[in-house]
Each structure stands twice: as structure tokens, then as C-alpha cells.
Length: 341
Ligand code: AMP
Image 1 (cartoon, rainbow, N blue to C red):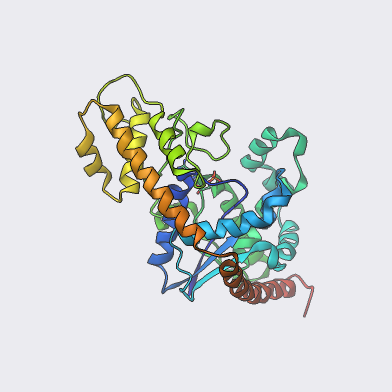
Image 2: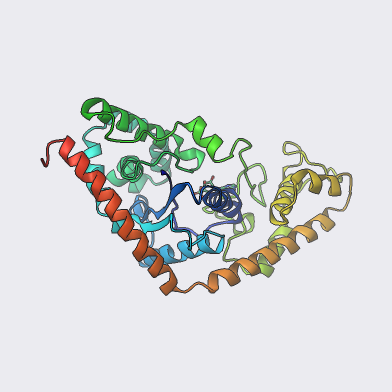
């Protein structure tokens, strides 16, 4: 059986953009491949503090992050779904060290995310931030994962993992690591050809981002539904005065149409056909505000119905599985590099 692997960072409160752009597609993929693939769903908690965080919250955020995915529809009764925390599978850290020693410094130095994040946190550029793509390679290679649903900002790190695996396979034998599929194949697998981007409510030329400082720019999954409705009502639009789907000239209005289509589970073209040519932006905002409010109420109710004990039980099962698979691979690598016979 092939393995699909996805890791979700849980440090910051996720947005509606995360839900529609990452949670929903991932949950759909897990249903699509439920019978034919292992679905490894892990929380990369060791990656969580490559930049500064509030450590007193990390543990609870992890549990909550998993609840969010379960509430979004991950099927916990699927025997092929494995949910685990990276930190509970020590083989991740052990393999990362070995991979470090097969990664040229120059190659790791080319990672653009390190340069960008380093520039954002100039006082806190750590070796961990530099090294995390190699830990990520270990996360993937330990499980022979072929498909790794991830955001486009991670494609360069995926390429690095492919390079490390290819280099080690050339040296130690082709059956050491499964080479993850290249970017193009991943995009096809994820059905991401159209590149969904939910826009900021206040600056609709930008994406809705959980780290944006302006609270009105984003809908958080924990937002009070009524407050979220107000944010939609005050969303930035334009002065054209006619509703059209036009991401270039009317990004705010177009963003609302996209949100409405996704939350109401209707084809975007049908939603556009309903609203095109109408002149009341207020009517459209009321409709979207209502959809957002209902979505959040339902979602939060589902989250609250999942107990910490439910999550702990799922984790215990998943972590036992992950340790078995990861330790088998780690031993194979240790043997290849001459640490054990
Ligand atoms: P981030 O919040 O940047 O860590 O992204 C985590 C995942 O959520 C990535 O797979 C992104 O593609 C997805 N995502 C984040 N923001 C948006 C957005 N505004 N619209 C669609 N997808 C998003």
C-alpha cells in the first residue's frame, strides 16, 4: 500500500483560508484513498518552535489542532488512518541527524524559506530554523511516503528530500528510500491545478493569513460566529457598483463569491451566475455572512463534541503504528551507514 503523509503545524489559530485551502482538500483526499493507502497524519510538533512561540500553549494546541481535523471530517474509524505526534516517534530526530550528514551545506543554504523567515525574525535565527527541512525529509522518508499534500511554500523542501533520498539510494542501494513524487505529480494528486487562495478581507489582493496583524482581515476557526459575520459585512470591496467575478479588478467581491460557493457546496459558476450583474454589495455580504456564521457554529459544535480523551486514544494507536514503521526504516538506514550489522 502506498503512503500519503501530511503534517500540520498547529501553533497559530487557523483561518477559514486554512480550512478551505488545506483541511477540506486533505480530508477529501483521505476519503478518496481510504481503502488503498496508508494515510499518515501527523503533527510536526518539533517543527513548532523553529521560530519563537509560547511554549506553555504547545501541548494543548496540538490536541486542539487534531480535534479541528477530526471535526473537518477525518474518518477516525478508517484503520488506514494513522494520527501521531512527531515528537513521540524518536526515529524522526535520529534519522534527521543521519540525513544532515548527507546534505551539502550549500544545498541546505539555498532554501528560500530560511532566508525569508530569518529576515522576519532576525533576532531569533536558530540552527533549528536552518535545519528543519532536513527533519522534514526524515518525516517523509521514514514512511516511504510517495504523496505529501503540502502548501506551495514547501515544494523546495520536498525537492531537497528527493535529492537526499536519491543521493543515499545511489550510495547504498535503490531500495533504501522511496523517492517522493515530484512537485508536478503532487499538484495533480492534490487536485490543486487551480490553486485555491482565499483572500484577506481587508486587503483582498493578498491571501488571508493567520499571522496577519489586522484581526478584521481574517476569519479564525475559533471566532465567535457573530463577530465573523461582522468581519464579512465590513470586508473591503470596490467602487464598481456591479457584482462581477473578476479577481484582478474586483478581488474583494470575487473572494466573497468563492467563499460562498465553498461553504454552500455549490459550483462556483452557479454562484457567479446567481449574483452577476446585481448591484447590492450589501445583499451579497449578508448572504456570505450568514453562510460563515452557520459554518462556524456547526464546526465549533463538532469540535466541542470531541473530548481530549478521544484524541489521546487515537494518538496512542497512531503512535504505536508510527514507531513500528519508523524504527524498521531507521534500522535499515543504520545498517546501510554501518552503525549496526
Ligand atoms: P499556512 O497557514 O501558511 O501555514 O498554510 C497552511 C496550509 O493552509 C497551506 O497548505 C496553505 O496552502 C493553506 N492556506 C493558508 N492560507 C490559505 C488561504 N488564504 N487560502 C487557501 N489556502 C490557504
